[in-house]
Image 1 (cartoon, one colour):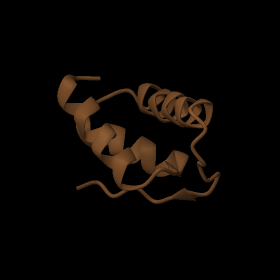
Image 2 (image 1 turned 90 degrees about the vertical axis):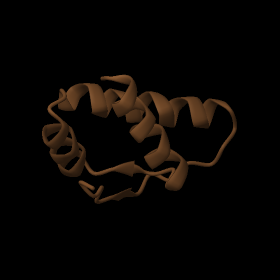
Image 3 (image 1 turned 180 degrees about the horizontal axis):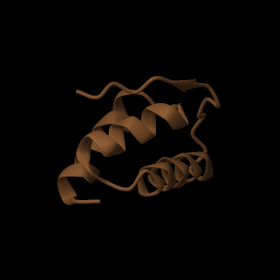
Image 4 (image 1 turned 60 degrees about the horizontal axis):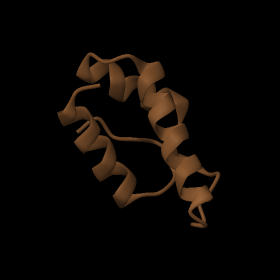
Length: 67
């Protein structure tokens, strides 16, 4: 993931602290030419860090837009 991808992922996470659906993460990754597994792992790590910090994180998913 490039620094631009990471900045975008951080922005997405700050706006909505839920994990996007696997399908929408894959579509997001494909639209940017990055590996979907890397995007999936980024969200898993971010969710784990938030929980470890004592933040409440929903297990619900949502559809991530491609914009």
